[in-house]
Amino acid sequence: MNANGVRLKVAGDRSRFPAALQSLIEQAEAATAANTRITLIVCANYGGRWDMLQAARAWQAANPGKDLAELDEATLSCHLSTAPAPEVDLLIRTGGESRVSNFLLWQAAYAEMFFTDDLWPDFSADRLHQAIAWFQQRDRRFGSSAPLESPADASLQVHLTS
Image (cartoon, rainbow, N blue to C red; front, side):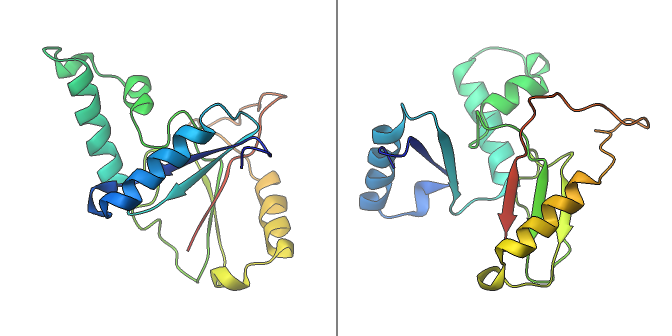
């Protein structure tokens, strides 16, 4: 991972993992922390509701005595287990399911969702290209009634879930 500039981040509740595994995760994250080419986020024992709750608790721990009214969306986002990754643009759901199943609830608020009956092991490069082509045709509004222009340097954030 270091040779390829990959930063590893594991998102999820690690408290239920054996201590040895928690230590290995911490070591791997520390060893790749300075890498900037790409960030690989592995969701393990992850849930969107858990993530929002732990983010609120992390904010509270970092800001003792502050009123909850001072917490805003941008600040809470900084405490999510996926920070500092950008929000999801395209969420691909495999296996014929048409729900998010508690996955990246906050981060996928304005994601375009592509559903496929393909099971994850059978999800092919061709199907990925089909999903990206479908995404490129979407009229993205981000909660507005009028289409918004995407920044010229915008990058597509693709997340696969099975």
